[in-house]
Length: 306
Image (cartoon, rainbow, N blue to C red; front, side):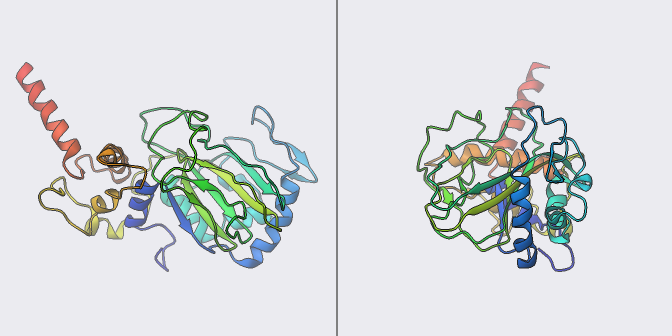
């Protein structure tokens, strides 16, 4: 991220479209990380209401109601609120879902030391829809997570492969999956459709993770720092079998994940291009001519019928 603007860059947003997540190691200062764990311990005792309509209260701490603007969540002296209001965090959120998005829900995930609990692969509350709009999920790890320490397992690039929440629970050891390890204060930003799961924690230290899901209140078009958009936004002629740029958004979107065997990646590329059209506001954007070919064929067919 640029030092004078905490919003994401064009290529970072393109990476989010290609991978379904962004990672920011050690983004939150240790001073906040140390204090937030105490607050998470209290919040973990607050049971989420079944209807997610009203906040519950215990030990003086309450969860916001679903649909609350983020600015109304966890007011001072909450350490979580302090973390969420950091300019670096606000810049990331603003770039993807706009200013003051709506709180959907949050959850405190804690795995005690030597815990054998393992979660199945799943998608969080996704509903199949052609709408390109998306929620984000912020995963915050306030303590260091080493190998085998219970870090979240996830499969990059699966966010646009729509699936019902439990349909993917039988899948194990997918090619290219990652098991999070990293320093204290790291934040992962997930597209709400990314496949993920909790892991067992056989280590000697508890693993803490705070998750919050946020929904946009505005169209998610050009919300990031677009100073570099013109330099990287290619036109529809950017084509791997003709003239291909290597500094373009299309080149980022061409990324092939290990589970995308053979030509399977082409189907994902079309989905990414459609999402980028929504984000960039450019209805003619394309990569490798796939959507342009279909649209021109459709136009010719409709013209012949007329």
